Image (cartoon, each protein chain N blue to C red):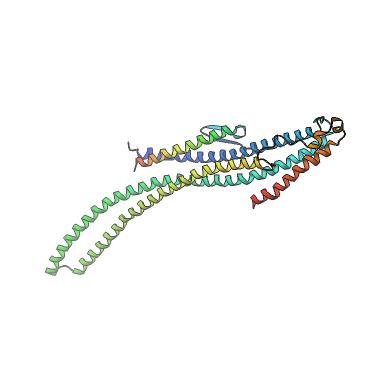
Length: 293
Length: 49
């Protein structure tokens, strides 16, 4: 069933409003989603690192208590190092999030263009319809003009024979008619241009849809790459989070008696914190800076 | 950073309080909605060609 003009306009207006809201909502949720993925992955990684530090501390001194006053200095050190660690991971995630943000913006641009092209399609259809009606009128006009031309021809022949009418006047009349017919034909030819525009518009719509679909899968890919990159960052050896840390041999063998006589804070700093800080610095200088270019 | 809220389908969503799975589902719904409304618009136009 063919829709009335009013129904068609109402439908397209609703389409425009819905699309505008959907595009906005999609961009906002997408941006929030990538942010949440980063936060969650970084939290997971920092917690794993914190647990690993605790395990290491207990390996060094099994009698060590978190609530103890002696732990204050170590706690401060651990907290500073973990903030540094977290910041390096945030910088890493920002690199990927920046790329995804650009893709989200491009997607908004393409989706808006797609909506524009769909509405333009309707405008071009209407134009073709108008031109078609015009063309029908043109052919009627042309045949009427042809008839008039033929009649004038006859009169001209008759009049020139009797020499009663000025032939120049008739020739001018004929010339004017020729020009009018030519203009009308040109006007009708515009329809070909509109049809070409319509085809171009269809091609653009297909291109927009293809690029949008590519962007969607690219966003998913970069998000996944970001997660893996965060998990792999500053890890030693295998490509996995550090749930357990190797027990330091020299301390594994010593007795509880000896352990309590070590300055745990200093040992923790030299065997856990300093190497971790070194890993953070190496990561910042090498991987992070090469990523940022 | 606060993620804020988003209005979609006559509902307000608090993005900070949503889990990743809930967000993914919401994104999927928006995407489906967009596709459906484009399909309908194309049909409306085709209907009048």
